[in-house]
Image (cartoon, rainbow, N blue to C red; front, side):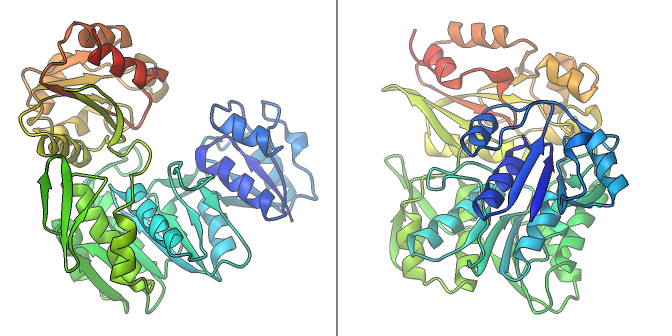
Length: 452
């Protein structure tokens, strides 16, 4: 089978292309920009294309086109594929076609998706289970973010609620039709696609209805909005709620209470304990014993950029986190304060997404940084241009966050100077962003904070 990827440079798109090539498919692709690590990964797989869109890439012998979100509706290759009548898929639609004979486990929710997915993958790998997967971050234990094989009976899928492609405006997680689905929580996001909270919530209502008959929904019983969705649903499926387990922190190590005693963990924070409960419940439905799960989970070190250690000295520590939604921002700050009591926290959030740069949405961040002694916001001015967003003033941010001492950086040099002039004594530092702070090396920034 021959498959062509339009916008092959995306994080999932290029991993899917590589997975198909490993499966024996004939794969080609195109893009107008390809950044690292996509460039190196594609080059190593022999799939790196010349840059630019070219309709001559699209020929009648192509069996399928996979369209990435980066490609516009007037993309010349897309138009040629439509003219030739070639079957066009979004990547979730194509993944479903590859996995429709497998047991599909889809992890959804406004937060924690990547971590829960990676926890389940870690446990299954530790017990030798054969499975395919799609996960939204590069994990140390796995070479790629997508694996597709002919024989694996199971596929673990991180189910993003954002739109599938420029010509398919359905949320990605509606397309996987899970046998087992998980929802970690519902907190309004992606306001450019879902302009009201109710519209956003409805996507999860529909997700539940897309669970296969006699399938299973695993859900967070501590989320009020989610609880209401579950109670109103009349689908003929199993429903299994979970709660955050009890835990204690002793000498910087978090211990989860269980019937096997206190389990020492390499991750911390209440939201990570909730993620473990979610992963445990899914693994139970997959036949993993409690003993096997708890033995494996104590070795789990976390997913990339999910409360990830960056650097430290004897007195201070620096972490980075993918947090960008209000709920995750608040949870990540609380986790650092709980894990390191008595230490002041310098918390810097990059507002990067369409939602976070929308003034109408900014009020959702009210009081999310109140536990941080030194709250700060960074907005990359290039991001504002790319998002076609209006400039946001420091006063607007202070009012929205309800944080009079909040500091605003519109240039990375100002943030660098702020950290250079601050004494690290008695303080920890947390970077939070779904972007990359304009491409800076956070290790270097951490060193400038730690070592004066």
